Length: 353
Image (cartoon, rainbow, N blue to C red; front, top):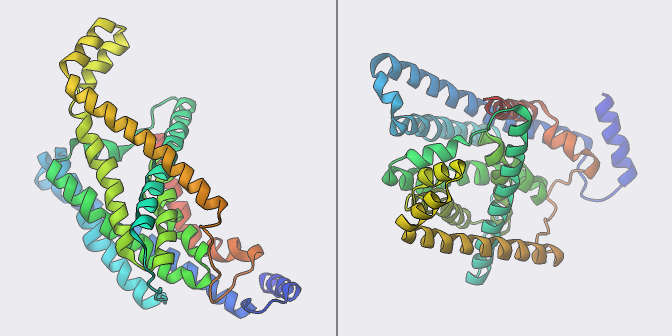
């Protein structure tokens, strides 16, 4: 009753047309709570399937657990074949969606969006790495990014199929389309923030959270403005191809371990010999690094210009939630709080090693 009275009082003070009624806001809170519980249920199911698969394989084929490909297969099956499809069925039945209108995006706009997305990815990744390093120093142990380790050891063909093709399609459908279609009715800004936040947390580690949340919000903005999930899928594929495949393969052109060994030993002659032995690889990697820096600067500049020109304006939804109550209605409900706490806890466990 107390919350209901507070909502009613603030609603009376605003007295603006289009603002939701108290009963509407209570239903909106329940709506987002169901959304949070559905994603948490999928999380639990994914973890449960992975645990069962690991126990069965460990008991019958223990050697397989040493294989990166086998671990990747367990992850793909539990998440994309079982968890996400079941979550889609639950959401489709329990949480109503709103179909977005399709709007055309010109080739120039698409190119600018790609550059901005890459720029935001690199900038937020740097921030994530800095935070990870600082927290690692404070905790006394290095915080590992498990995704990098997996991608480094994974077979190139499987890397392309999983990281560049399969993951972007499924993740855009689940974390962009499913969420945005069910949140945009309450404002484009709400849909964008919720999509990015849940997408970032779902990655389960601090470094990936930093850039995944930023990328997720930007792609969600593109989706609410175009209504075309194919656009966000294609950009997501480009990001994963460059960051998850191409960069890894370019580092294979040089002997990183040998170079780091000489660096730590202070053997500068050995370092120079290592560079000369892999000169072509270092040149190619150098060119790639300069392109990354150029895209980073260009993307950030374009983002700032677009922000100054108010290109990232989000429109209100059919049901307007008062600004003073958005946090308590959209986030501070049982389902969303449970989802956020579980994944924040997973990130903290990963940091603790």
